[in-house]
Length: 205
Image (tube, rainbow, N blue to C red; front, side, top):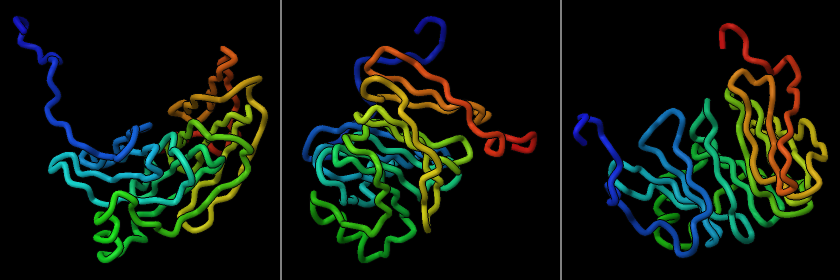
């Protein structure tokens, strides 16, 4: 514009067909701005290089629509997802081989990479959010509850769970210092929850 500042226009810099059905979530890697992940009603997760617009791999495992995806802030080879099948799932891209990567890209159905299935929610899971250090993952569901998971590529476990709202939990966010996690629901309420001190960010980070 006249001020010399860059402005948005009506045209995307790039666009590409990513899934066979509706896309429900996108997330960039906090560590690598070229890495983007997507999730869809087609029951797959896509991992993309946005510099080349290349599909790096396509993963499947959920039964039904995948509602959200997130990448671990401290290890962007660790993907979290949640869906209408009542589960939260953790996938490690390090478990892929050259052969399984190629197999995952040959079909829209993707590749069923072995992964962790975190069960406990009794209805669809809508939202997930990593803490800033990636040690904890929060999930929110139509069952009105929030669950907090200990993140691990080897053996994730449940840390805490509580009824958070009188209706569906649709969004979650952590404060950067990890003192609080916030939940929001279709009941019109925002709730702030104290995080135990051992998870708070220290002066060293």
